[in-house]
Image (cartoon, rainbow, N blue to C red):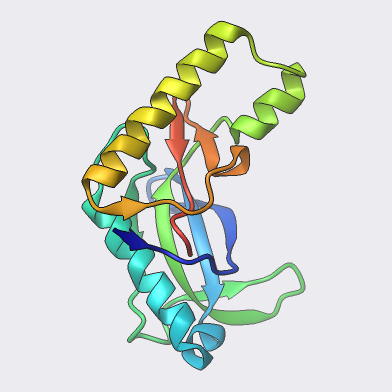
Length: 157
């Protein structure tokens, strides 16, 4: 079974300026990846994992940057500074994390807990049958789409 290690990254909301469609963008500074073979491997492993998994309870990859290009992926931060980045574009998960929902409601009903637990088990079974493991299952990495269905995220980037 392939285990994917954790790497620091940021997830931001992105919008396609032509279509207006929203995405989750997982970004990492390109110079950090260039300095660390482990980070490069982790980035490539996450892309490979997401491209190979197709399950309703696992986040879908839409696009990703190539680590070979350098000039096309630039992120301007809140201070106006530009940075070369590598990114993974993911489906937009409108309703936040399961942690957010629990904090908002203070607790989940038994029915809701069973609903999300069964979705998580289904996703984990699929991952393991696909020869992948997720080493960081926690409520922060369980997101909710527009229909409040669970989506597993963060495959070690």
